[in-house]
Image (cartoon, rainbow, N blue to C red; front, side):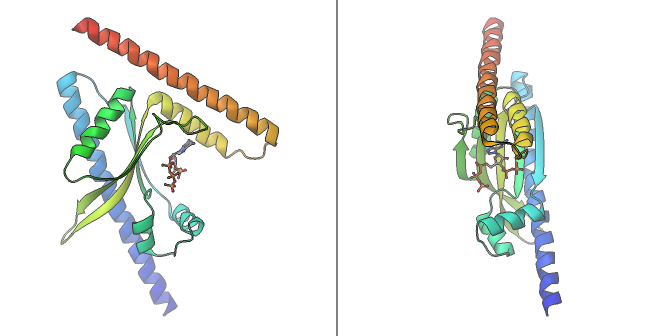
Length: 211
Ligand code: 0O2
């Protein structure tokens, strides 16, 4: 009986992960379509890169444990919002908001939560626009709503976040040094944010001259 239960849970989890990867394909396509359309109309690609990732089973289990949720497929579907993640990296901040607006206007996309860490950066300096959306995937005989976490950032924000993410795991530092490094990282985030502003200003000047 235990083996049977294990087999069932395993199969359900495999199926759920496949659904999440389908949802990622759908959202990625939506962004690629928008990129094509913008580049036709404005001769500007608002997307530099797209990265997608599925949370590993191990991280899912860790998160369920941390949130004191049962190890059940339904708990994953109902309570975790970041199993499927897509990161859209844009040249300019303006592109981020334009893409987010276009995505949210689509009638099969439902916004569940928005966190604007660009307008309100995290204490450590982290910046990005996070959206949790629900989108349908169409299966053989049914339509399923799936949650996807969308992170939109500029190249500069991504550069900072990628390095900070790597450094965060180096925890064997004494308290004083880690406070100092956190301040240094925050300062780097400010520098990179001001670089974003300057690059945007350069772009705006060029555009005004073209007109
Ligand atoms: P990974 O490896 O990218 O998946 P929750 O949704 O409950 O997990 P919360 O706080 O509501 O938590 O999520 P939030 O703040 O919207 O952001 C979660 C994700 O954003 C993280 O996922 C990171 O990808 C990114 N992120 C948030 N804060 C930081 C930060 O300070 N530095 C960096 N580098 N990335 C950040 P994971 O699961 O932590 O990591």
